[in-house]
Length: 220
Image (cartoon, rainbow, N blue to C red; front, side, top):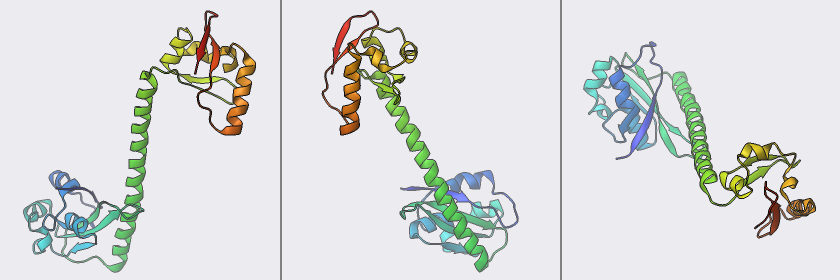
């Protein structure tokens, strides 16, 4: 069974849903008998239940609705910019009836805003996960990896790069005036930068670097 995140809206009277109702509504199965939100997601359209005690969409949730003290539930699907379903925005009323046209437009607008917020949150979470995976790879790979600023200052270096050049820590590399100091022949670094500017990327370039103890190391 698919699950859907329901975003409950403020009730008409400003009352709050019961904790149990919120827990059920926030993660409920997508079907046509578990409430307005589940039905709106299932059908891909607004579901306006004027009286949950009679509405067939509330067949499996009538007791819970009565316990929570509301009689009407109006749900609008939440969609991503590309149209993918994200959830449902629902407003509950303690009195039976349908929302006025103006209120329905406000509910639809709230659902659009919720879609934007959910997409943004998911994008931020995906970025954090990607950064965490990159950090794990960066720290654990056997190849030396470093990053430097346009002026040559070393901004980041992974443990393999630090070990390859015989330094005690990455901080020692960051304290250097520039990455050219690591080259056996600094002019070689200048030539590499010109080639990088011209071509955008460089592969399989063999370089001679200088270890901290002064020994030469050849790198690819």
